Length: 249
Image 1 (cartoon, one colour):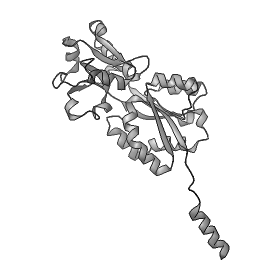
Image 2 (cartoon, one colour):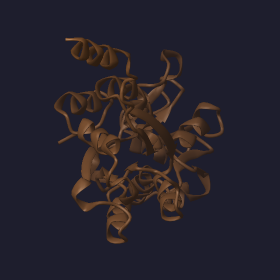
Image 3 (cartoon, helix red, strand yellow):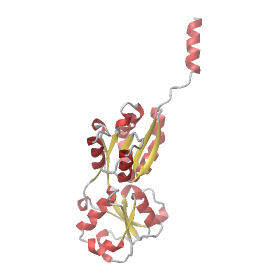
Image 4 (tube, rainbow, N blue to C red):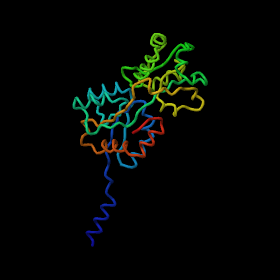
């Protein structure tokens, strides 16, 4: 009886087992979404989530050069595939967590026409901001839109570039460009005063922005990292991601 009582006392006074600290590299377009999911994931699993955001190309380069990330949430499918091919990520962990959409946005009300292509052809602006197409899939999609509308020559001298989609939004918000191509998911983070006008770009004007997540090889035995990818696959979280303007299968 005494031994049983002692055992119970030890269990009650022993410190709770600590979860993993998961270091996730997150494409900038998805940062606002995953930040809102962070506390829920931590409460449900006991793991701590640390986020580092940047352009997909820059994060990929950091991973290749040994950055200690455990999970990579890219804004494309190509870079996770390269990491798998190079043995730096696990193929069986790869999942498509979202498909992004592109918007043409200006903080000025009525500035972007209901047909944004007409706004782009109007020449009534000096600067158009896009993300760097070499680093950011949303910038690549924006460049495709410009090309498919036949406006490369018309707009070439007007383009200014953000390193990622967050910097692109900042270029427009601060007046360094009158309008820019941003992620639809970013529209929801704008204040009512700065919401302005926008055009949701038809998907037919650019390649799909399919976003893949992958577990990096260094985290193969890390339960917390796997738990985070499993969490992103749950129906409730998929619904949350959709509510931010993404398509999710």
